Amino acid sequence: MYGILTVVLVVIVVAVLVIVKVAGGGSGSGSGSGVDQASPPAGTPIPAATLAKLQSIPLSTLTAAPTSGVVASPQSVSGEALTADGKPQMLFIGAEFCPHCAAERWALYVALSKFGTYTSPYFTFTPVEVYTNKPQGDGYAPLQTPTQAQLTLWQDANNGSFPFVDFGGKKELLSAQYIFTPLQSLPFSTVAAQVGNNSTAIGADIDASAAQLITTICGTLSNDQPSDVCSAVHSG
Image (cartoon, rainbow, N blue to C red):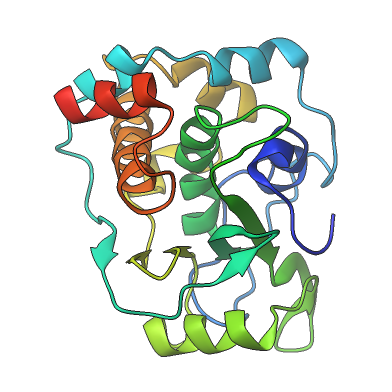
């Protein structure tokens, strides 16, 4: 799973990106020692029923989620507008060892599923996982390498910390939207079961974060399309 992947492939990359449970480690350029030995190996297929559930959370549920747990939001910038495949690029830079990244991937997956399943006419989603969760030397083994343009954008924005999301050079998210610690060491299935349930803190945080991402995508990348999705989050 290297190179540019459109939002259509988020269903596939989630098996690599979101399967890493929140555990030891932290943000930064690759230092740390915590590794979640209990996580399934990267690439482990996620049950189809779980994917279907995550993709089908109603927009009304997302917009109704309490926002008290949301601690970071995308901020307006005047950066380079990266493109890919002739469309605006939504760039995610993370690392498998990073617990903040693991938390953010849940909201990203739920949000991105509203813009495409196998094709997206609106934008190109580009995930770059820079490091694995396997220790190597003083840090972790490398996985993917950002392009020079992606690297410059990332380093200029937050000195290369994880996670980083750029919305076509118009907005940037410089950290996870919510605190990862409630998810720490929970089985993947336990977290997945709470997504879409605003009566739980984990569910509410993921849902509210996803709604915020959808609003940002509508305003920066998709020109408020699809109209039913974007009008729902704007009215919510």
